[in-house]
Length: 162
Image 1: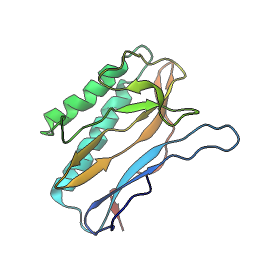
Image 2 (image 1 turned 120 degrees about the vertical axis):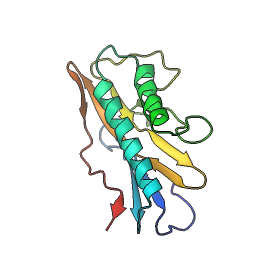
Image 3 (image 1 turned 90 degrees about the vertical axis):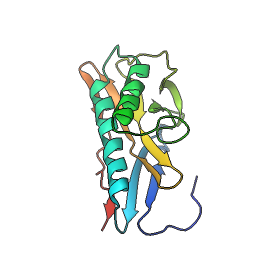
Image 4 (image 1 turned 60 degrees about the vertical axis):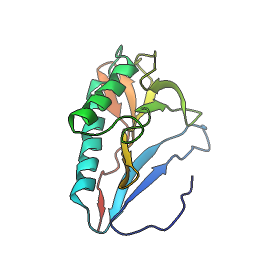
């Protein structure tokens, strides 16, 4: 989605980038959230909550770990921090497989029956969305290794655009 409407100061801008390699056909996927202007306390808190949920999810991912448990860790983080997880707040899965399709199995979500396997490539993209505030999402791509997972995304996570 190329977006719509004006980009207003002091509000979040979610940038979801998913390039496809022309030689292999494989996708990458990354989301960052930015604010041009002043960052309110509530938007900074949302950003910090999303970043913490993502960090906890990535630390949990390892061979044999159910992807539903990874999603549940994000849900629990948001609930502990006072955020909603139905209708508003965290309203989507934590991630998805990535390969020759932009969204493919395995899914990192509440209903997933899959467990992490060495070589899986998945996104980890928790987010919070409130109609009166806007949204925040941070997405990285990880590959499952024998020791856990390796984050393949090395782009900075910075909320405020100077």
